[in-house]
Length: 298
Length: 305
Image (cartoon, rainbow over all chains, first blue to last red; front, side, top):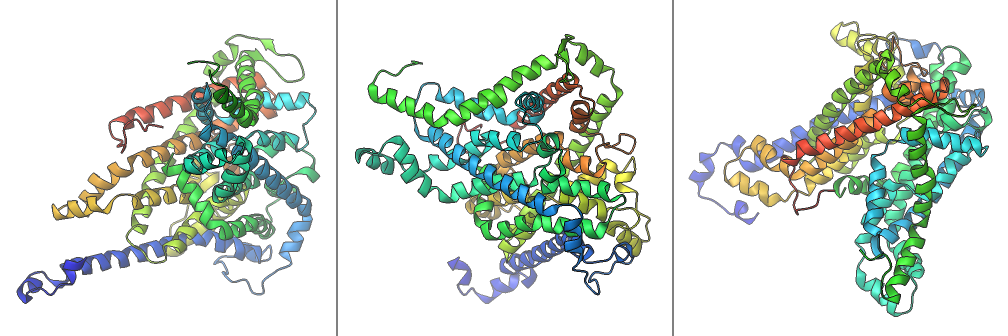
């Protein structure tokens, strides 16, 4: 603001005490806000620190009060010990395959469907899109039981099929999200491609897919993270230990051990969340964009 | 509406449209529409998967009315929702407002606050079970070390169980926080400048500009929060090992539904529960939309979805 930097007559400047000046008040607000935000950030991080700290203790020092924040010596062997107590290498492989496949399936199918809804005209389109939105209101619990019965008839219980196959048919939430992105791509490009003889499929594959890479990335990450954390689905469909994902494996830890081995449990938990945190740090931009778009444009 | 378009070009486009949406369409028929119909039918039968469903009419619903645990689960879920949703909304909005004060390192703060929301699920449940452990947990230790207070039994105490889960859910307020922050940054600054010239203080500006301008986003988060709270399951299942204890104090709706469906194999009974859940969520969403109609401001008319 230019007018504030202009020299003013001395008596006006002195009429307002310094602590009431706008620039000073602004600065004070920023400082106070930063301090509160900093305290909040520390509080938010403490559980993580506690988790990592416990993961490096012995069974007995984990229960010690006051807690030893930096374990001396750090027991790194907790990690291999915890991860071999149950077949975690299998759990991780299962989870990774599951999350990757479902993220791929959902991104591919949602991209196709969203393109149709965003850019093509057809009778019945609006009614169908309202149904897509309507299914967002339907709790999973309503369709859960008949789906279970269906997969039981197909002989798919205790396999990964019931968890993976449906994702190749899209998810209403991600279709909606991608459609919002696709709506914003300029029609001129599409018209030019049409004149050059592109089919609708070419337009999707050569124009929409490359132009919406950030959006597709967002959808893939959201899907990956959702399935990485998923618990209810695998809990219902899987029973053989070797087939479990990390989530169910972790939850079974206590029962398998008899008593709670906190140091091991925390080591396994740290390992379980590390891939997500790494992905989050690399993909932050896309990820936060996705959250914002779902919430604000919703 | 004409079902078959007149021109050849439009017909071709319509065909492509149906080809593109066919994954969703097929998936919808198999994994949503058919299950909806089947679930409605199951809810009127006695069904244990092994034997064919036996018709009982409204028998399941009649039994639910007299089922004490059903009412308990409904009560617990309402309690959880009406504690968690307002608290999350107020806390996330205040934090967003705080971070909107031109705080330096905004990116870092955003990341830190958001971090807990990406690790939801079992790992978080186990972590909080440890932090709120009555004997060796961090919170009770700090309560004693700082205030000389003996902390409660948290998840293991009838009165504290639900507040404990709410406390734990507050840790994950990063998702609504980021949405609020984005919304706040979209409010035109001219409005604030104009209000300041008219002598409006910070509170008045917040109350009469910020809140109305971001009200659609608040509404969105509240509705998503209600729907999510009514379906809360994983944390409680993991921490109480599927029981909803102590003394059914944390037997949330979906947990009781799960027990009936997959432990007692009463699929018909659980289907009836699922339908009641649907109507409760539907009713609350409509209610939230109604209440907000006179309070929510939309920039362009008709932008209600």
